[in-house]
Image (cartoon, rainbow over all chains, first blue to last red; front, top):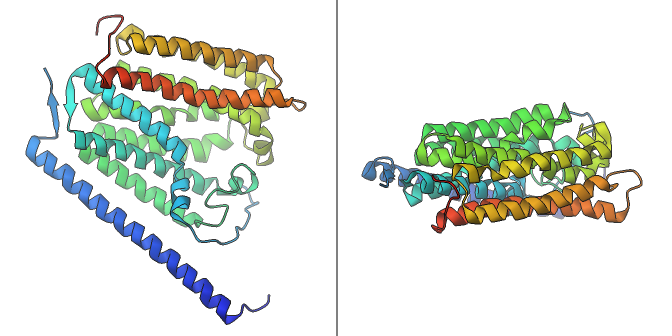
Length: 56
Length: 317
């Protein structure tokens, strides 16, 4: 197989790096979102039982 | 798994690829029916769940559905690469590596079940976990490639959401929840077999025993009619228990009549046959599309009645 020119390799690496950064950003946001949801459910549970009430 | 795995050409994944990995169209249906179950449960029992908890429980159902979809795409990546209908999916297209899809599916499974438990109760969380297992393992890894009844039995996975929604509110699974389960259960075969009439040659290529491949198009068309004949009276059961009122009754009757009309025409057509005409194949496609509208409209009627307070049962509650 022919060797890729250096500029093509570095371009490929730049694209891979960009894709990886984008993915990491989304993963970070998802993690923050998950933590926030755990906090919300915990607060609701602590304040009002399990957040369920009977409506007579 | 087959040996003919196509090595995909590498391209970098976008957010859309990860979304597509989770089968968003199935996710929408799952979330909608789950939410309808949740709202109906609250209306029928008088039990009120905190709106934020309801939203998080619904999100958990969405994530669970996405997780199951990712696991399915991980396992089926070999046959997806061969079938033209699925060759552009994230894994066969080279965007998302297989092991990444599996990792995403497993992590999302855990997160969704945990969120469901936090937002509701162990029963809803357990049902969600079971439904993910049902779809990802029982259907995808076993039934799909083993039996022409794959869709019938495996369709149970997609029928759980309204039961999960109901359990999230009340902590139990009464008859009404299982009636909603039954509606989706008996809807799944005619829905999927209509699609398989269009794609049976693709399934034959990868040796997946869909009904048109194992028993032919004529038997499949008959079975679509049989299951639709069962589905219509099942869809009227909510009227007997008080779960469905006048609006639901009108919707169920009208939609059921239309679905039956499609099924009868399809049974009389040559859709899926080797010499099928373009008109017959279009009929199969229209039946498939209508089946999606049918379920959305039916559960939409449940939602409208119970959310808008216009639920007037024919029989007492």
